Image 1 (cartoon, helix red, strand yellow):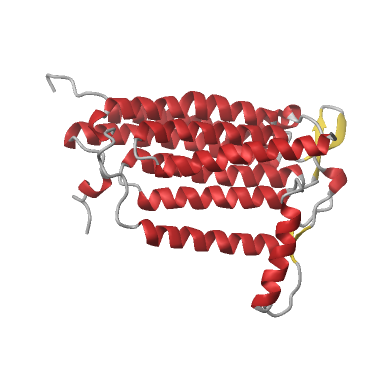
Image 2 (tube, one colour):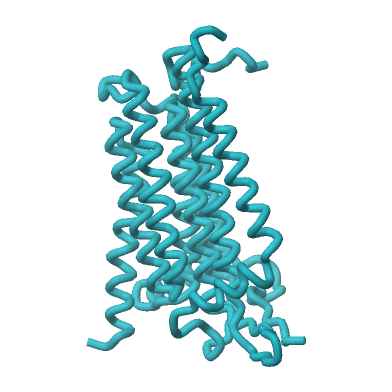
Length: 150
Length: 171
């Protein structure tokens, strides 16, 4: 049974920092942010992608544009999955017939593959629904599709 | 120039493509331009995957997203022509509340990212290509989810055809 590395630990269990301390720590964080290549950078970009996609879902009026914003959100999650898998270091045992060896676990990449598969299915069905609605109503504007709105 | 420096430079190039493309996708008024901007963003994410030693995912990203989903989206935009017009307002009245909500969530994420101590094993991280391990995982460890994903794609294909087809004239 391989030893499980904890992915993320809280740095301290103390009470909340004061605002000045938070800003000081943020300054140190920013200084190292631009010259490093690590999980923090990818986490930040993934969170930014998720938030941009969320903004698009909230703001856009066209159904196809909302679908594209959803794809941006899914990609933000994918980036974080693959980046954490890159530095995780979890070893698993791979047994084939008579030999067994310890290899690094690619479970984050497998999860990202399933996310891509579900995104493809969602895009196909979603666009089919949008085209059917467009045929019936001559519009793809979400605000016009309020028949089932309470 | 060291290899680490090259990686950081490429990382910044891909970051500009990814974030700029995503912002363009949610702000461009013409839907067609938004779709092209999304292609830039998705290709940049594929570049991230190459930097992270996830070559299989990088290829899957380009084939599935840029080659499949984006062609589908552009075809849907072209089919529904009167929504492409530049003069149509594309945003609703929620721009500032939406900016506030997503910006606040981003600040929370950055704060958590800053306060977390990542406990990683630097010797145990991927340093080379790992397509073989991904294949082993899909075909040995996660066989059942893989089969179910195939079933899901099959059902989605049939559902999309049934929903989007034209009704026959005699029906």
